[in-house]
Length: 218
View 1 (cartoon, rainbow, N blue to C red):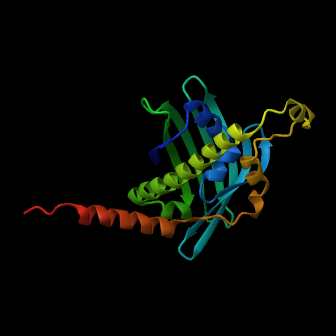
View 2: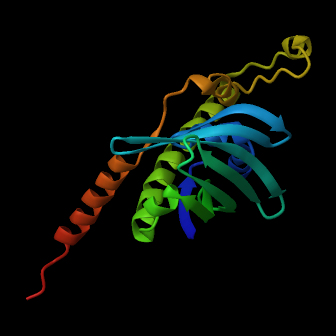
View 3: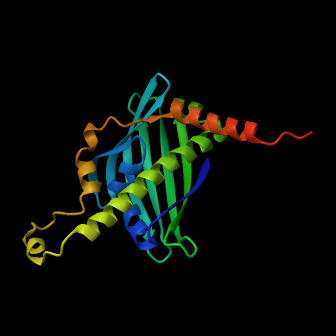
């Protein structure tokens, strides 16, 4: 199935592009997902936790960034997941496409995800309409977290004094970018998980507000 979402961030396209190429940062902003190791350039091991009411499911897999194009501001993140108790599997291919947000100093991000599921996981995913609604809620959470990271990065850049001696004395290979690296180091201890039941509840409440908020025809 294909899921299409769109969101915007209050950041220049170059800054948003750099952030979305940072796989540890992207995963840290995605609800329920953490990284557990590095396989190679732009390829990582990770886990994602999903809670279906009283049922907790954990998926282990790989996440890989591929086909980044600075000319078109597009990139694909492919992932393969296996439920740790053998209750199914899932593969996803998510393409990000960035574009300037009109005359404003912002960026629009179009997200197109192809999802393939097997086993018990596929049974939970039969309601495409519900999955799209839940996906929209998850993307909103992701966008809010990404916006915070971009704002924090901008503030850190503006506040950091220029110190050529300090920069020269930094050990080779040590990054000073900070937030995403710290979260990646602590990923294994994270208890973050997606509560699908909570997301469904918020989706139903939103739908009810739309239905009951409509003017009644006479």
